[in-house]
Length: 165
Image (cartoon, helix red, strand yellow):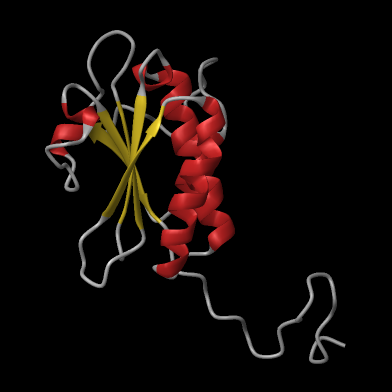
């Protein structure tokens, strides 16, 4: 990310083989912003995959725009639903018992500091060149900074610390 507070943007082809590219790009920038890289990869992967599976972004000539801020915000803009308009804020209900909902957004909501969904045109990171501006949606979350390891924390996963022995 540049030295200023401007967000970084990237537009990826709407192909499933490109999810890893979007995930790695977003995770690297979010890690620079202080987010846990593994959590960043997981959340970016989930949001980009959802955009490809459930919107026109996964269709022919589809794209997904990913934006990251220095404050650890992750925005994924898709090209909008296959039919109808982008649901506004509150269009997704955590825990909704629907066949077309997996557990991914529940995971994002649990790991992130907030999850929002709305029109890409109304997104605080909207920019004129974004392909999602014409009817697309923005799903966004903020990744929390990792907590400092407590004193005496184990250096290796699964190894008890000296303080715990």
